Length: 218
Image 1 (cartoon, rainbow, N blue to C red):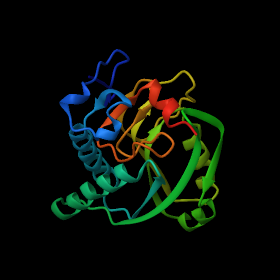
Image 2 (cartoon, one colour; image 1 turned 60 degrees about the vertical axis):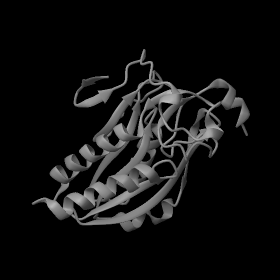
Image 3 (cartoon, rainbow, N blue to C red; image 1 turned 120 degrees about the vertical axis):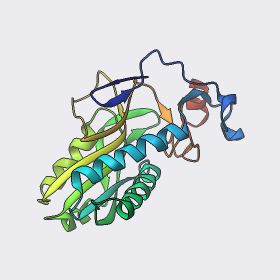
Image 4 (cartoon, one colour; image 1 turned 45 degrees about the horizontal axis):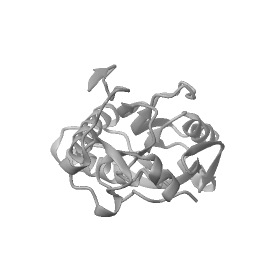
């Protein structure tokens, strides 16, 4: 795994790890190709992102905005690390939380439209310092839509942290302020990333196999 621009990059030829090297729920054993990012590596990287956020935003009152549903696990772990740093560092970040849900997928395909659920409540963010917490940025258009909606509410500051950023020719060029890993253009599940609501209970980030796409298709 190389690191460029201070973001760990998983190369396109990354082989990952065999499933039997890790604890994978038995009901998913036939649905996954391999483990790409083990849970322990996710946690270590999340802790580092928390340190960077506290370093940059310490002293500001922050509204942490979780993008549901896929972002909930990363959001929870990231905030746990920030709270731990608040107790043990010279700088601290006063935190409140809010939630929004975006939908842009049908099966494994990103649609051209973005549905925002909870957008009417964005007006409460006027004049606030906002940290958007997302699980994955793919084309970037979903996040650009959310940022456009937020700008209409005149927040004081907006930063975005995403656990994953996908390399894809369909991308708009958008890059978050904080990134966990840059990943190839694969369909990934686990650590709350889902396929039609399945695989959120998988601790590692894995590649979904083609058979599973048919099995869980709606």
